[in-house]
Length: 162
Image (cartoon, rainbow, N blue to C red; front, top):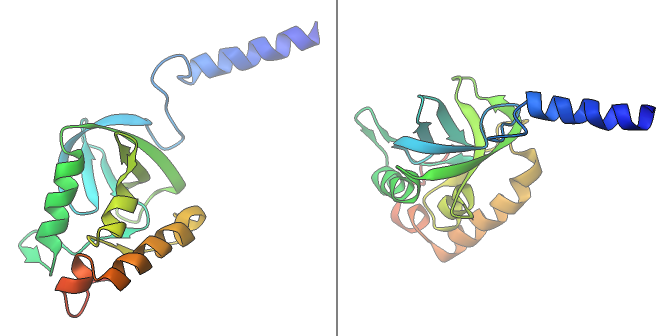
């Protein structure tokens, strides 16, 4: 009897936690539509939640502040995600110190963080604990972009990375 009760209890928990409909993670929904792109590394979901890409730092292009390659990073990010449904995978921490959700974001199966870094629109920024699991992978993409002088690596001196 116990072997039947345990799976039924787990099924009940799964349904109660949203497993029967739209999947949710511990930090928020796993799929959402992007309402607005704030800059090269931050977006706003429908409903108002702000999301910051994990391990990514793009030059600023907000509030009258325009660093070298900031407008290009903003335009590229906007072309990738604005108005589109994205998939969000949470990092090791749910929020940054500004209250923005931290997530890896993908659109049509393409990892936005990886695209921004490998095409030279962004640098890797690791703020522990978020991003620890993918840091080496994205640093390798940054090294390739730097060697090829892609994007900000060829356009900016000094490179506007923290």
